[in-house]
Length: 293
Image 1 (cartoon, rainbow, N blue to C red):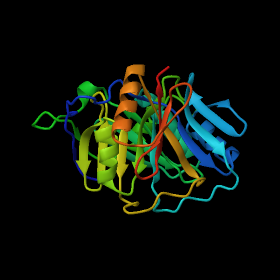
Image 2 (image 1 turned 90 degrees about the vertical axis):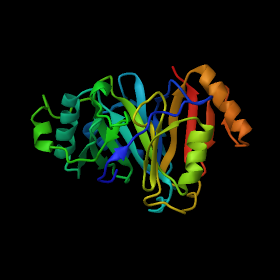
Image 3 (image 1 turned 30 degrees about the vertical axis):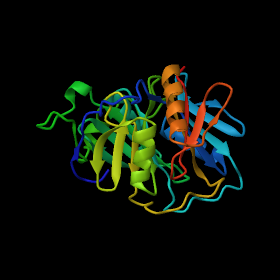
Image 4 (image 1 turned 120 degrees about the horizontal axis):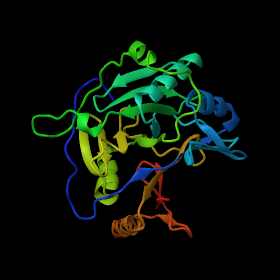
């Protein structure tokens, strides 16, 4: 997010809007997943849950990052649509402080912001995939604008004060750690809005020059969309390194309603035996919608 206020509006009440959404694992494609393992295990604090051609890392019993090995994967062009960042959410400030010390101990370049509704650390993995680690403030503490909407800003985060709250450096992320949101690079913001809002059914929570922030259930955002680097850029070639897909989890009735909206919009999608829907947005960013466990 750029350094300016974001004025968020409540979800638009309308028939068919998505509800009861949670995010699952973000799948990445990489030439050498083993090269990324120390970053996600030691710095981010995720447990290695499975290995082989696909590494699976997570917290508790929740898979958060999957990395598929593809030795011939070409790097994505810098301006290509894809992952801006995945946002791994820790349950409290102590956990965020522990991750700060782990990232610093790994010698990584760290960005940091206070968004009023959350506090966030930003870092890139060795392949250049953006990773945010953040903690939400309780919703009752989210500041409001005079019109009653949520206010967000991008302010400096006092890293020295945060570090003093760490009980210990590093260690595994808490079992309650989850995927809080994803932020995608898109080539056309209007086309992205038509897909993610008009068809998928997310509500616009914030408009910003070159960006939209959308969500279900009144959250500040589950999906960010921006054209800051990627306006007008073509869909990257199949097999490019970077984002494989994001995972969004819904109750069964919501998944069926989504399938109906996709069909009504004339959008092609795949559906497997478990009912999981795989579909790409207009910029080629793939999303898997599945029934929540």
